[in-house]
Length: 84
Image (cartoon, rainbow, N blue to C red; front, side, top):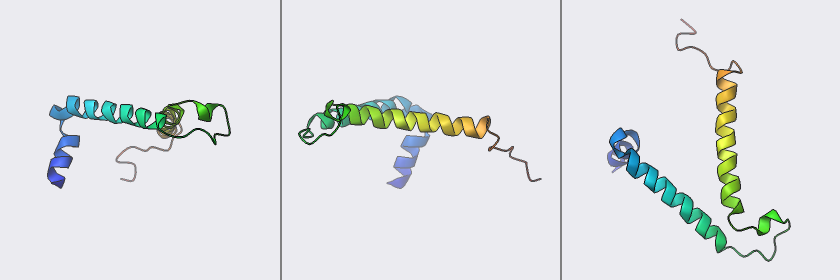
């Protein structure tokens, strides 16, 4: 079973299926956010349906870009043969 999962996420022939699966999961998360009770929300943006999903997705994208920037431009990433 693990081999099938690794093949699914690692093989290029399943790229369209993976993309559809991830879009489906994103839509399900946004729909699930509409089912959450908002009566105890403290801030205005907490009352917006879908805000948690958008905020979480945006935070992940920002974290990825920031870490790539630190690695490539910030000098944290080294060549493969750096210690040779």
